[in-house]
Length: 60
Image 1 (cartoon, one colour):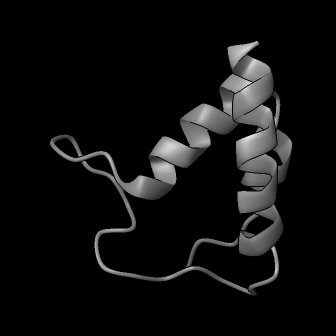
Image 2 (cartoon, rainbow, N blue to C red; image 1 turned 135 degrees about the vertical axis):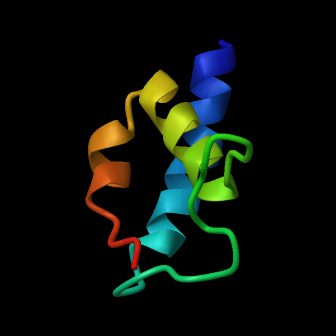
């Protein structure tokens, strides 16, 4: 049930992100002491079966 809720929550997020040619921003990438928002989205996408869609996003 929880995975289904996450799937329905993150699919629309990816719908919006995929509209853009690239994503850029402050602290968009992680390092050893910081996990960025985009990496949190990636982890969740992997958990709910949306990893392929996430991997096709151009993170500039």
